[in-house]
Amino acid sequence: QVQLVESGGGLVQAGGSLRLTCAASGNIFGANLMGWYRQAPGKQRELVARVTSGGNTDYADSVKGRFTASRANATNTVYLQMNSLKPEDTAVYYCNADVHTTEGWKDYWGQGTQVTVSS
Image 1 (tube, rainbow, N blue to C red):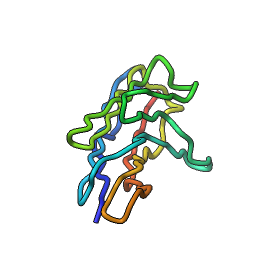
Image 2: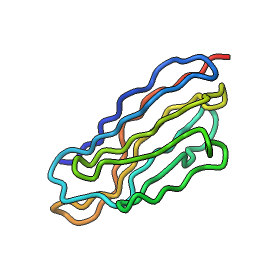
Image 3: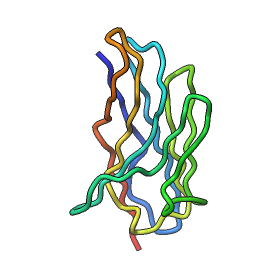
């Protein structure tokens, strides 16, 4: 069974930083796209950032220049370094990964981690 386990959320003041980590575990042969989405109260889930296995990244316009996504392929781990945080970054952040398992390629989600930015 594959699991995505997130950590690193919390409460921070505006202008501060947080680093999120998501590790995929289980019977995994590898992962293609790994990334982060977020969902604020009353809003739809949106893409924040994603990283290919080759290290190419894609960011939402709202976080460009402030957030950096990276990954460690050897451990199927993806990171999100969040700097210059703003109150509008407050949301539940979800890890997402396209994982190669014994049952083929499947899409998985983490349980979510709360990020709260106070003004």
